Amino acid sequence: MEKLAKRALLVDFYGPLLTEKQRNVWDLHYQQDLSLTEIAEVEHISRQAIHDLLKRTERILTEYEDKLGLVQRFWIEREKLMEVQTLLQELTEDDFSSPTACERHRKIRAMIEDIFVNIQGV
Image (tube, rainbow, N blue to C red):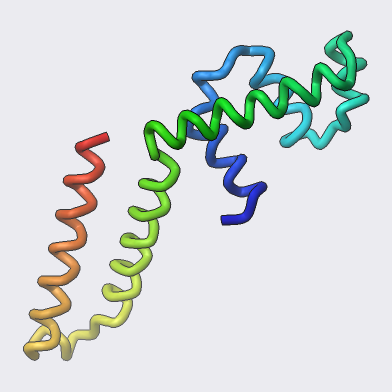
């Protein structure tokens, strides 16, 4: 997974667990694309302090993911849903009168049930 996308997902899932200052500095740097120097001026602290805060925040987010695995679970479920979508798109009216349709239907149903079981476990 691309590093920027991973950071975005980490903060989407675990951002509410961060302090207001951590969220604010993260947002200024990664969402608003401010430099460390610019953020330091806004926050009235040193550039090094901003750098340290961002590194610590990323470590905290990574630790949450290591313990809870919500981002990983999201990607697994997303892949399953994409496969279901592909299978559904392949169905035609003719499929419903053939054994192939029945097998696709069973596969789709099993995948959907698996997704619901995993979602309820969250």
